[in-house]
Amino acid sequence: MNEALHFIRKAIIDRLTNQITVDSATVPVYNRVPSDATAPYIKVFSVSHDEIDNNKDTFTLNCVTRIEAVTSFDADSGGQLTVNQMISSILNLVCLLYTSDAADEGLGVDLGGRRI
Image (cartoon, rainbow, N blue to C red; front, side, top):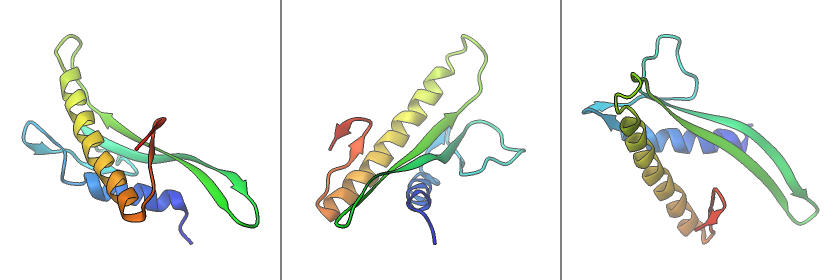
């Protein structure tokens, strides 16, 4: 049986795949980064899941999944702009994914302490 973290990772990876570009090139999205991968790339991985509340009526699971934008650049070359643009695109796509799902289910979504 797949865990909740699996479904979260899959939804994020599916949403980001072929959607982020840097200098007109598509940025690959990985769950496990291959040894021959070159920057830039995006890594999506699960950090933890904790059972918060489990009683006879409810079950609550806290899932933490990270999205990392990986780039490489020479110091003082302005390379930070590339990663900032990647992050902006990622946030726009992921926020749309979660707000869309929440709207479908009539639920709110917690994004880093902000409930939407």
